[in-house]
Amino acid sequence: MWTRRTFCFKYNMTTAGYRKCNRIVAMASAAMVTFACALQIVTADNGIPDDLAGDYCAKVGCCTERRDEGCSAPILGTLCYCDDFCYVNRTGSEDCCPDFMSFCKHVEPLPPEPIIIRPKCSYGEVVNVNCNACRCEKSNGNTTLVCNHNECLIDPSLLDMIKIQSRQFGWSAKNYSAFWGRTYDEGLKWRLGTLQSPEKILQIVPLKAVFHRDNLKSSYDLRKVWGESITDPIDQGWCGASWAISTVQVITDRFVIMTRGLMSDALSPKHLMSCNNLELQRGCQGGHLISAWNWIRKFGLVTEECYPWRPWDGRMAGCEVTNKRSNNDLNVSCPRSAKTSQLRRVGLMYRVDTEEGIMNEIMNWGSVQAMMKVSKEFFMYESGVYKCSNVTEGSKTGYHSVRIVGWGEEQQNGKNVKYWIVSNSWGRWWGENGYFRILKGTNECRIEDFVVAAMADIGDFCNLADRSFKENASYTLNGTKIDIA
Ligand SMILES: *[C@@H]1O[C@H](CO)[C@@H](O)[C@H](O)[C@H]1NC(C)=O
Ligand SMILES: *[C@@H]1O[C@H](CO)[C@@H](O)[C@H](O)[C@H]1NC(C)=O
Ligand SMILES: *[C@@H]1O[C@H](CO)[C@@H](O)[C@H](O)[C@H]1NC(C)=O
Ligand SMILES: *[C@@H]1O[C@H](CO)[C@@H](O)[C@H](O)[C@H]1NC(C)=O
Ligand SMILES: *[C@@H]1O[C@H](CO)[C@@H](O)[C@H](O)[C@H]1NC(C)=O
Ligand SMILES: *[C@@H]1O[C@H](CO)[C@@H](O)[C@H](O)[C@H]1NC(C)=O
Ligand SMILES: *[C@@H]1O[C@H](CO)[C@@H](O)[C@H](O)[C@H]1NC(C)=O
Image (cartoon, rainbow, N blue to C red; front, side):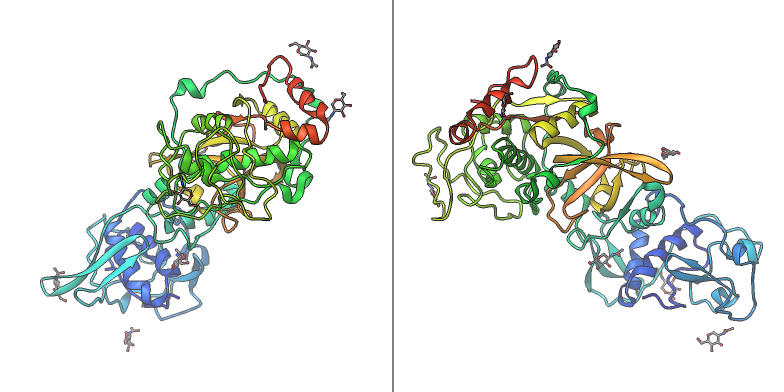
């Protein structure tokens, strides 16, 4: 950890620069200190709010001439100082509190000036600082660490800001080691993967379901009703496959629910990924949801055990299953234990809208797919009720698709907060066991804009079980005929 008197800035730096350096240094290991500070030269002032401005020395109310560990204030898990030692013995910088000069010395900070630092590095050395490659270069006999300038997926300043204000945000953030060292562009490209269809298609007329409001519970969780049969979030790896994973997992859930658990085998996202490869579908580089649903309606899916998912790194395997409409000659070798190699199909995709319409749909028929707009802080979500904030306003966003499996409410600062329970596709190490919760009823991050599903084609199960279930299934949706065969 940061030890006192680890210096990296000249005194006349801006207070903003100091704080930024300070908070990174505070978290970096000793070995990383110089690099972390060096990074600040190249990424100086990227518009992170001045959340650390404020009273430190003013609050502890002391200023001493001699070194005094007691005359200090907590700052980001470490201490800043209000004794003269923090700058008298300076070697090019200090570890004074941000308001030391103004409060103790009555000197206002000088206007910003380019920061010149000379961290010790050996010429030619190459290191990575988060997602940036840095090289130790020589200029006028001094060595300087020069880094490239990517926006990183885990942004330490943003992470701190959310950590400090997690009560106001309503959710907490985490530094995921799987994301550390990756660029934000890589996150957008390989961790999402839903292509935006034209607005016109996204606005297909939603189904008008008729239901009684009173039947809608204030909380509902498919996982509690169906237990293990609701499959765990899959990790898409560095492959933009959310379009395929969310579609296939929704269909798997719907087979479980509509067959009352008779058909509970997970279907194969890889089948969809690698075989729905015409039109504008782009495998690991994203896909359109409507095309995915139509393809499954036409061709059907084999189960996961017949065509298992193996995470790729941006590459897509070719389709190994023959695109046939019949169950014969599929060219899949299901394990001997497999219950079935039948293709599973769905009916027409339909859209549901309104908060209550979506709730009704989930309660009656199972999970639904939702498209959402993702900005940088979402990658760092750890737990709580997520909200799209405006902290990264103006920076790039991407589209992602997810599976809504329920909803609930909780008290936050005396207020009742309603949320959706949503399965992501980053594996169980992310968020709340692979799931996240997001504010419900306010179209947060556009998550209520395009919510779709289809009926599972449970034809052959109807013969096995309750033939009438199929009929009940198609009639409950009042006024709209859903083709399930
Ligand atoms: C400054 O640092 C040197 C060595 O690190 C130390 O001997 C000296 O006492 C310090 N001066 C003050 C005023 O603390
Ligand atoms: C190199 O270091 C010397 C003294 O250490 C300093 O005077 C000079 O300005 C530095 N040059 C650059 C380009 O930083
Ligand atoms: C984030 O985690 C990585 C590895 O898990 C670590 O090297 C890095 O220092 C951490 N960064 C911050 C800002 O905590
Ligand atoms: C059948 O599957 C094997 C791998 O299991 C694959 O190598 C082969 O190319 C597939 N054949 C066709 C016609 O897709
Ligand atoms: C962000 O939103 C909050 C409240 O919703 C508002 O007070 C603040 O000014 C906004 N910030 C920006 C940069 O738009
Ligand atoms: C279908 O509806 C009939 C009559 O309403 C009912 O008796 C039967 O239990 C229902 N079947 C299922 C599977 O819900
Ligand atoms: C179906 O909708 C009509 C009006 O759209 C309504 O009068 C009727 O009661 C509904 N039927 C059921 C079973 O909900």
